[in-house]
Amino acid sequence: MPYYNCRVAAETGEVFSETFLAPTSEACCRHFRERGFCILSVKRDWKKIRIAVFPHEKRLKDNEFIMFNQELVALLKAGYPVLKCIEIVTGRIRDIRLKEVLMEVEEKVKSGSSLSEAFSQHSRYFPTVYIASIMAGEKGGNLPETIKRYIGYKKVLSQAKERIKTALMYPTVLVVFSFVLILLLVNFIIPRFSDFYSGFGAKLPVITQALLSFSMTMQRIFPLILILLLLMVAAFLRIKKNERALVGIDKLKLHLPYGGVIWRESSISQFCRTLGLLLSGGISLLSSIDIARRSVPNHYIFHRMRNIQDDIKNGENISKSLERTECFSSLALDMIKVGETSANLEGMLFDTADVYDQRVQAKVDRFVSLVEPIIIVLMGLVVAGMLLSVYLPIFNIIRVAG
Image (cartoon, rainbow, N blue to C red):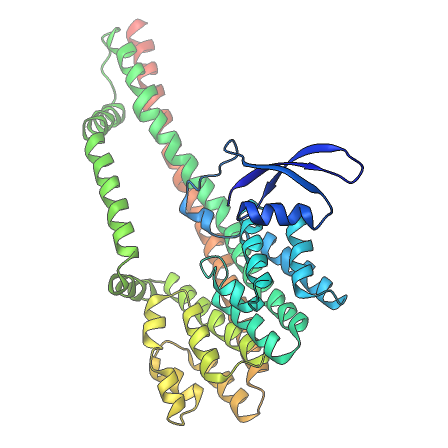
């Protein structure tokens, strides 16, 4: 979305210029006219051009998105019209991408579209669950409460992701630090010490010779390693566009020791929480199942759940249909079955999601607690080996010189 440099005059006769972000020059002019200004000139501001460099820039930050919805709910409860709410919230948004999208949503609403229709035009930014929740709120006449339920849902997912990221942060930093240390020693420090030692005619220890051989080999094959990495990146980008390949890879993930259980249980939690949210919002079971299935992050489980809607249409229970996928554990199936028989499916789905969130977090914490000491021990061994390869030749030189 472009910026426009607008020169306007106030009723007092004061003339000033202001830069404004708008989808079109007409929208920019309308913005200032509605505030009582006289438009003197509108020019495109070419100095402010934002180019999305990284693919992840297409995604909205969770905290910004949650804050936007919280403000939207507060304004709707205060009795403001939807269009006015969007306009007020957009004016306070700092995230440029979110601001651009909301201004386009505002234009759609002004042209007569419903809020859900306006958001659906930007499905790459807003998840299907969010759009479906707004649609349910509009149809049920209870939009603020529906969005409030979605905020709670989004907060739980965001907090779960943050907990996992935080738990894995320390081991990741240790691995990166040890890798950088090895690269520095092998490529810069050890070769210089080698030249220094050769001047004394001292024979290098076996560990130092092995490290030097490794360093020279790495330097020779570095172009091949770089080409291999580029090929791997190209293959990864290609695989991301191939649905069959993604299904196969995600199936392998589920069979990995320890990690497979975490992926499976996190997918169960995501599906149950999403389905519970949609059902509580008044969306039909078949539509809710379809949207919840698409929210599952694992492509293999998503593929295995493709026949659930047909099974339900044929009169089968949800728990029985999910059991046929062979992706849901007996605990999850039993809890969903209890929810069906007790006419409290939404509540039991949320309870199931909470149980599996706790199980996933416990497994991640246990994994980190096991990995951290292993990484520390390995780093200690690596550093000790590096120090021996540097200091043993020094002791030899002292012995030769003495």
